[in-house]
Length: 242
Image (cartoon, rainbow, N blue to C red):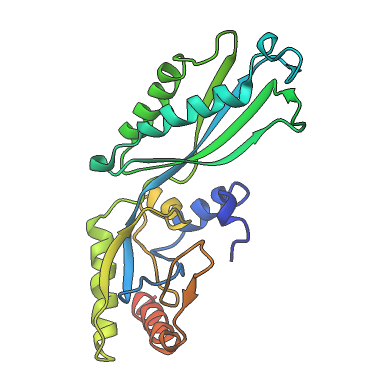
C-alpha cells in the first residue's frame, strides 16, 4: 500500500525494490483497462524543468529595459515540446507554468514543468541532450535559460516472464467464461520498480476503469467480483507448494 506513487514514489522506491527481490513475483492493483485488460508493459517517465531568468522593469514606463522571462519561457515551451517522437512512443508535454505576480511588472523569472514518457533509455538520453541544445535558441537576448531532465519511473518491458504470468491470469479468468486482454500503457506505476530488478511483474489487476486523471474517471462496479476472483486465484496458484 503506497501513498506517494502519484508523486514518483520517491520515499518508497528502495523498499519496493528490496521487497521485490525477496519474492517470486509482483502483482500490481492499478486499474484494469476498459476492454477488461491487464498491463504487461509500461513506458518510463521523467520530469522536465525549464527555468528562465530575465530582468524586471515597469511594464508601462520602460518595458524595453526589461527582459521578459515569461515570453522567453513561452518560446522555449513551444520549441521544446517538439522533442517528442510519436513513432518511437516518446511524448513531451508541458503541464505547469509559473511567471510573474503583478501585471504591471515585466517578470524576471519564469518556470515550466513537463512530463516525458519513453519506451527506451536511448530516447531519454536524446531528449536530455536536445533539451540543452535546443534551449540555446532564444527569443529574447540576455535571458538565461536552464533545463533539467529528472528520470522517475523506469521502463517496464514486456518479457517472457511477464507473458508467463499473464498466461496464468488468462487461464484463471477463463474459468469465469471471461476473456482477459493484454496491453501496454504510457502511464507510470510501481510495477516498473519490481520489473526493474528483474522480477516477474503483472499490472492492471484492479477494478476495470478508464479516463484516468480526468473529471470523467470511472470504475466499473460489476468488475469487482471477477477481478477479486482473479487476484485470489493468482495468489493461490503462485503460492502453490510454497
